[in-house]
Image (tube, rainbow, N blue to C red):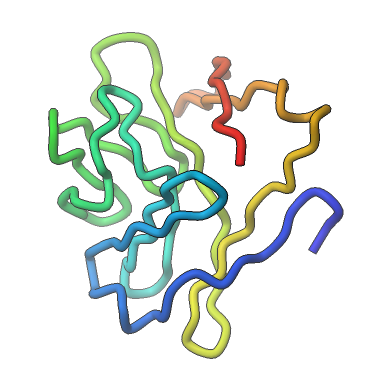
Length: 135
């Protein structure tokens, strides 16, 4: 653990069925944790298009389709793959499993870094600003 991040126990592995997700509320935000069988991935639970609950979407490989307007989100990068407009993305979170429990690595927000924007990385490597949601 570093001075800028901390690991939080979130959910039991058996509580998240294969190829499905569960939403957890941590620090005032909803995070979706996905069970891909060989690993767990976690992302913000709000689609950047219209705020759809990604935890209720259809999982295919390492992507999820938003249940509201069919935006396809890469769970590894957070990038929206079929966005017709400017690049869109959501925040991703590192995960690990200990004793059958999924842990998420969350940033420890300070007054200084709350104003820093996040970054949306396109598949080609170009970056675009994205406002962070503070804990």
